[in-house]
Length: 488
Image 1 (cartoon, one colour):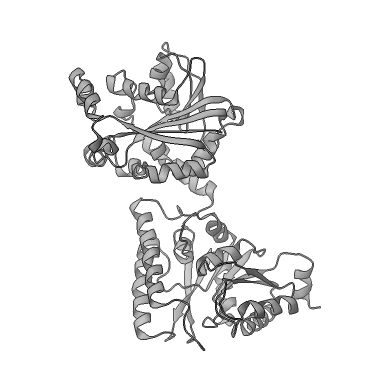
Image 2 (tube, helix red, strand yellow):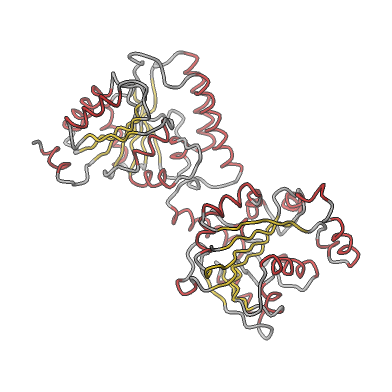
């Protein structure tokens, strides 16, 4: 047994893991494996090859099964019951890698296995991913031109190298990024580009296809490209930084938290100051009614800030406690509450609350907080842990369908797209699925309001508003959204 075989046989982690999606490649996979094995032997690298059979319509699975028997334990096969596409197949293979460095490549031998050592040298220079920059006349002129347009747009949208394809070497950081991605239609190249990690490409001559046609018909190729560009454009529109899509959760969350603190601590924003206006009092009344808060129930207000609503809740006799990310805002709340109300305060990230608070509350509430959070599902799952069995999670948020908030972002000093862009997620199709995925039940929504503060604070304005809210034609556009779910 060779030294390379012995390393893998005894369960040690290989130097490199290959992940190769297979669809209709019965004629090339054996040759591919032998060329990879020879390349690794020449570079004295231990290795594993993970073939992912994406429900191939030909004899690929039979050939792969024979390779897995003849060359175990270096070769393993992941059979997928149904065809999910190249990118899902890659993710299925990445979930099983053991090596600290991974190479993803196609099984059709258009990409030369002999280029692998060059890609690995790029990782040695500190890059997190090194793409094989495609060179040569490996496709028809029409396909090459459309591919160049697509890759140029993708480069502009998510900073992936403009010549990048699916032949790429990556380190463990990128693998974590890809496995943490929650995109419904993953596109591996753009996800790597959006990771924010250092990337590069090196030119590699690509061969023409030896036989048969591409698994991507022109129609499927166009649909995949449009979906990838649309997703990347949505990332840019939401204003997220590179790394948002699937950076390791702790890193992305910490970066988001730093931005939030800088945004709110830099200037004391007037719209966050406590006041007893009828406009704000109605927010509190609607939330308490929707949450069905009973006397004596323990309530945690998350994202309490400077106490804009906290003091009104305490004034109503609610046993409220506050939690906020910013110690600066909590200090300001303490100064406002001095001599008014004794409110226990906790400084922590919503996604990582103190252990002492877990399972301790009947109601976890927030007012205009959700749209500032990085990941709704993560937040709901974490906040659910704070509830007692049967406890309620209740939030009051801007309604994404109401145009008033977008006008305010443009003209109001206290609001900006940078700070409030999460409003676009405050709609039924986003919030309710996130609650469901977080394991919270009995979710429901309600809407109320009509006028901005300068009208809602007037007695006649409040009376007219209560009538206008009942008109069915614009009920879905009412400005405030109430969200409730329970820990069942």
